[in-house]
Length: 160
Image (cartoon, rainbow, N blue to C red; front, side):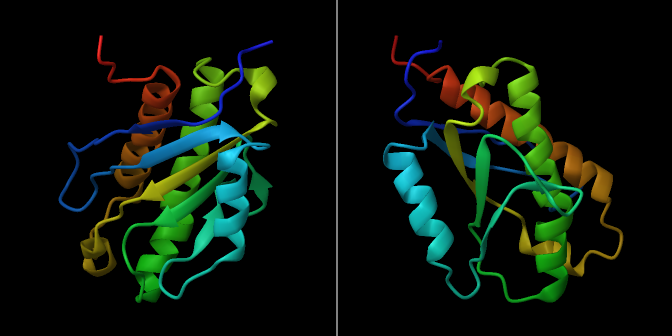
């Protein structure tokens, strides 16, 4: 059995795509029966206009484990932006979490015991980009999420 994971944090900046597609998730991860679980439950029940909080899901109805709550860093006031955030980016984050489990960054035996809060940056310019490449956006957010989780689970960067 793995050691107890009370609270760990991580972030990753991944760019390299067209304008507006960079991702910079900030992750908090920890046991559901600790401070992360309390924060996750509180955030889920405390919806704020323009800052919806939703679980990361696949295929519209499959919640990933560890349970992952997405929180937008941007005030959302545009339906196209919302559709991109709750479509392409939501699926990318869910896949990034699964990638972290598959890679062993999150111990599989802990997947049901941990919670993740993921603060999401999605550039508002995507709402007006008629040529937005959703595959590139998906790939970048997926990679950034997995990397932020890896950093959190490895306590990176370290002071050593």
